[in-house]
Image (cartoon, rainbow, N blue to C red):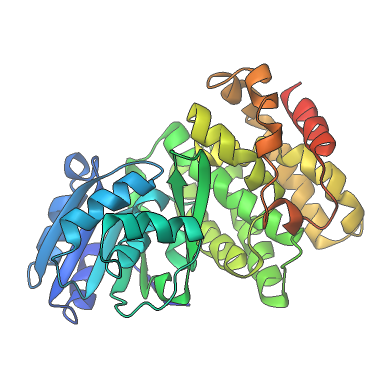
Length: 354
């Protein structure tokens, strides 16, 4: 685990941390320029030699990392600064892989192997999340999409856990509506999935319960966004720390083909089926336990958001069911504490989409 920095001056904190680094790759999304975060970051990093990548896409894929190799292979960076949502932070983790590859072909090969090994070069990652949900700022893995083979890939290594995560909830003020909601639902999903995960531990349990409490409080204050922002930031951090140990499970496995094939935003894709999954998971919890009380409260919140209607905007019921055979993902469906078959998935989807 890296060091967490809670602040109301992310740029000042970044400037302080950057004094330890001479050559920095700065990764942001296209929207960072119009929001002013790119200029603020460049000012904070003015004492370092900066190479800027200002076009990180949503759901970074192998093709983007191959392009990143061409842009960064000659940069002797000792740090990678990621300012953005989960996609930007995951791309920064991919940049560490890029720094250890001799060619774009090697980048693709190692992503498809699903692991990082022998990282001779491990630049520090400094993450500044601008959404509250992915938890990527505290996890040792990243999602990289393989559009050529139609799969979601994961890369993982202790070295890609951000060495520093700067948490400033005021960065969320630029977000409204679904841009704020969908990442928050991702965080909620992380906490719930961690509680019914095979890989759960005492430590992940503490973070999952805490994250779920913050998510419920934040989403429960949805009509007063200013009050919700700091709560959602804390939810993201705790939920991220939970899945860093327990990993995610069936809800995330369901989400992958929906995001890849139809562009369903990740937070929506991994949360719309949670009530149906939780119904099956109820046998795993004591009826009067804190865990189940929180899950039950979260389910009511999810139902109020009418997520089925949001799914309908991206794909039809028929299209969703055609993906069932791709929703069983090793390491995800088998991380759920109950057996999962294609028939089980079909029933979960039917309940979720009715």
